[in-house]
Structure formats: structure tokens, C-alpha cells
Image 1 (cartoon, rainbow, N blue to C red):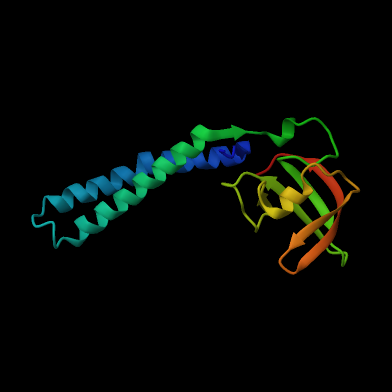
Image 2: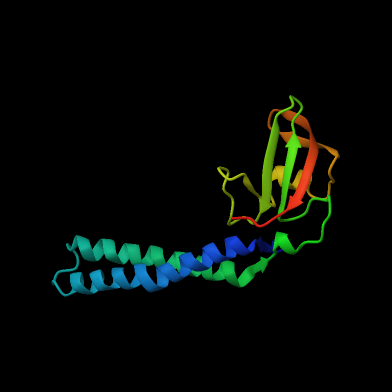
Length: 161
């Protein structure tokens, strides 16, 4: 069974920009270096040639990966979601842990995870626990250290960067 590649518009744009940068800037630059290095003669002991070919393979793998991710992407814009206090993909959720600590996270696609921004994947344990719950609900989160109860304080759908 294939998992859908849900992604926000901002995440889709970042992947597309990375792909275009690889295609329009990085790859042509490396091809130029490899061509120059190949013209220098013996390729077996030519470090520029060897490294360039290796880097070209890495770039091509990344291009293939990003292309597939974009082909399989299902773009979901949290800004266009109707107002609801129920948690779905794209929600920005503030919850309180048992000790009163408040944490705010946004539920995003697997290619957009950024813990510094509080962006967690929709398939992460915290997101799976929160999805379909509502503002005011208390849910049980299974952690390696045991089960924690967390209370959903607020749910908003906004543009994510």
C-alpha cells in the first residue's frame, strides 16, 4: 500500500525550487568540470574527473527523487480549509503536556519536517495521536518512557512558511 505524499504549498514550492536549481545550476556546472577534466587525459588518476562523476551521480539521484516526490505530491493548503476545531493535515496545534508545558506544532508533509519551526510529519507519532481530535480534547501519546496525556488547547489553519 502506497502512502500519499501530502504536502503544503510552501513545501511543494521548496522542492520545486531545489529541483530547478539542481537542473539549471548545479548539474550544468558539474558537467562542465567533468568535461574539462576528461579532456586532460588519463581519467583513472584524475581527481577532478572522479569526484565530478561521483557528484553527478549524486545530483542525478536527487533529481530523480525530487521528481518522483513532486509527481506523487498531493498539495493541501491549510489556508483554504474551512474553519474547524478538529485536527487534520496542515493544522497548527497548541497542546499542553501533563506538567503544563505548552507546545505548538504544525502538521506537515514528510518532506517538510523542521523541528526548529515546530513542523512535524503527519505520520509522526504526535501527529497520528492528535489527528481527528478537537480543541479541548485530552489524548494519550505513547512515548518510549510511557504514556503521556496531552490536552489540545488550540487548533488553527494558517499559511505555513
